Length: 374
Ligand SMILES: Cc1ncc(COP(=O)(O)O)c(C=O)c1O
Image 1 (tube, rainbow, N blue to C red):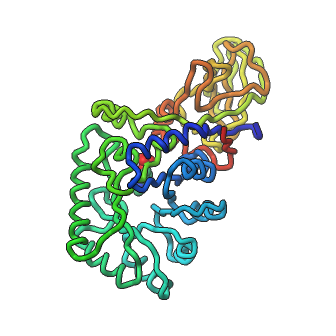
Image 2: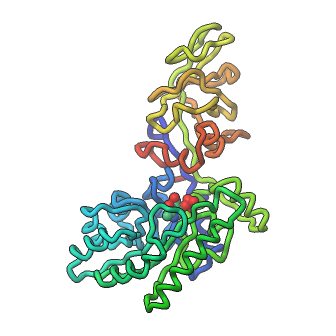
Image 3: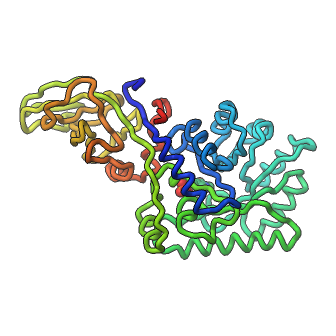
């Protein structure tokens, strides 16, 4: 324990998840775990190292900032940047030998200007129905020719599914996949062959062999979480009985214990009034740390027992009711997300309190908080 709050990462779980994904996709497919968002909150560098040690080929980041951190940590594996890079970031991206996703003519022209004879690997993003990044199929041939004429190497073609994890009906995903294949065929008919073709995120990788192509970009599954209930249900319906292992536990410790009389208020706005003489524990974390102020009836775990948050969540402090945990004392460990005894606060349960999804919950645990590999 090195701070008032810390995140423990189960190395074995991360290793097992990557090995499981490798088994699903086979040895011929590039396995590119997404480590953007501080590795979905699990710690960029430590997660990346564990993934690479256990069979990952590439790493997927969102930004130059993340790519730079990886290179500074001595990681030499190919890095694929999924997000937009500004014009003034391109030179550094080239010098770090990144591969970037590309979909803007303006970026191609800027690259041409600064490459000056050097080559650079790009992956064209095809617009297939997500309407986020992407080049429309009607424009893809001209775009690819512009890339080639500008000295770029089109190393890959990619797309991203809009509705593969939010439903057990995967028809929209397969419509997108058809458009993606049409784009590949169109380029290949015109003599443009592409080394890596990729569309699969976690749900695609877990559910369908046909979308894995020769590269996959799973994120959430690498950390042992399912993209959604729908994906889990679909996997069972298809008898694809993958087991994923959760890697993250978020902890803090009790900073103070106090007795509060019946009918007293707790916290800002007097939102909570005790209904009995209560024992309250003060925990030194708050919304600054990622413990969302909007949580609906959350609790923490102390000694395997639930202690409900009382009153408003503050920037750096929460107050929890330990009246029924008489043994609780200052400096005792508190589990905010994870297991304690027979109890478990999963990222999904936390997400339900927050009105969001597991992705957001773990990703928003403040980057400042230490990640400790166990
Ligand atoms: C382009 C792209 N590929 C892959 C992923 C990984 O998705 P998942 O975490 O659902 O596996 C993401 C995540 O947002 C993404 O934006």
